[in-house]
Amino acid sequence: MTHNVFRSLLRDLTAIPGISGHEDAIARELAERLRPHVDDVQIDSMANVIARRGAADAPRKVAILAHIDTIGMMVKRVISDGVLGVITIGGINLKSIAGSHVRVGDLPGVVGVRSQHQAQAGDVAVNSMDDLYIYVGTSTAVEITTPITYAPNPLELPGDLFVSPYLDNRAGVAVLIEAARRLPADLPFTVYFVGTAQEETTAFGAYTALQAIQPDYALFIDGTVSYDTPESKGKGSVMLGFGTVLTSFLYISGLHGWHAHPKLRGYLKQAASAHQIAFQQDAVHGLMADSRVVSWTGTPGAALGLPMRGKHSPTEMVHLADLDNAVRLIHAALTYSWPDLKRG
Image 1 (cartoon, rainbow, N blue to C red):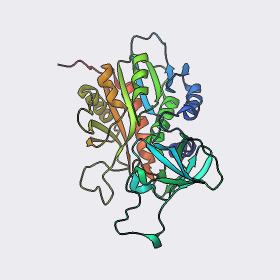
Image 2 (image 1 turned 180 degrees about the horizontal axis):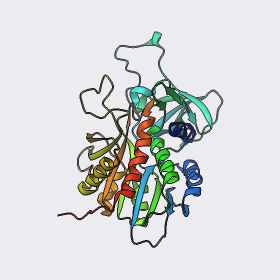
Image 3 (image 1 turned 135 degrees about the vertical axis):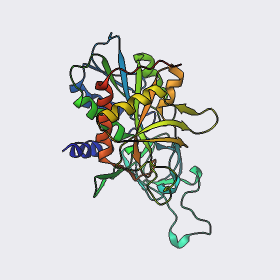
Image 4 (image 1 turned 90 degrees about the vertical axis):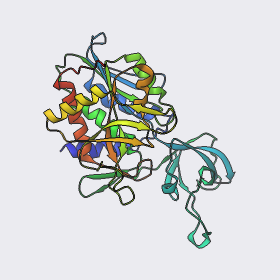
């Protein structure tokens, strides 16, 4: 039954457009989904959804965050009648995009791909952002800067596997909604459920939300990589269906890195073990998330990763058991005890 709840949520949430910086529609949807389960819900000027369960002036506060924006594209220029040049918003997987069905605003479209009969030596689908173009049909007026998203295309596979564009991070949003719905009524502290904007480009949404809330600690729910496909096997131990990933370290390059608060991550491991909840662990190069903003705000933070195959492609895949596991771990953390987060 729980998995059916997630199936329904994922079908609904992944169909709502919301590329980074254009999150209004998904923000409204999330606010309405959370409203029956909280005492107050607001959408701020960044399009963050901030929902509160408990007193606003409580001495102890916890924030649970999941970003609501997605990667996507935007119309850059009109190449010819019905053919558009684009720019990418966030980290598009260029290897997977050729031939994808898209929505240009409200219009249907398709990402152009060279006919195989006209293939040239060295063709590897889309080589760079400059090679991207989209067909929307002739004599169709399209405004420059129109947002472009993948067309909804959910698919269920045997074994509780769910495939769709934008599971990063609509899967995290589904966990946020279900965590709010199942939250016990008698917690002795206030919990904020936050859908953050602009994670895929700036992370400023999470920053402004944490600055407004000033929680004692923050838990971030987001997609993470798995290592259970032919090209990734042996590069790590995370697999779909084996539980939430308690990430210790994320890194891209230079100074773009993040460390989980060690005591908070240790507390999550204790809570999981006490409630017999399976979890995985990882440290990841090539991935960044909203959790990095805790370095700017001084908030103790930890990440609950949802294992995904094909991340940032039109065919992202999750195991529904991992979403339920994440909800269980959040509730375990909130009811186990109060963590000692003092350093040194």
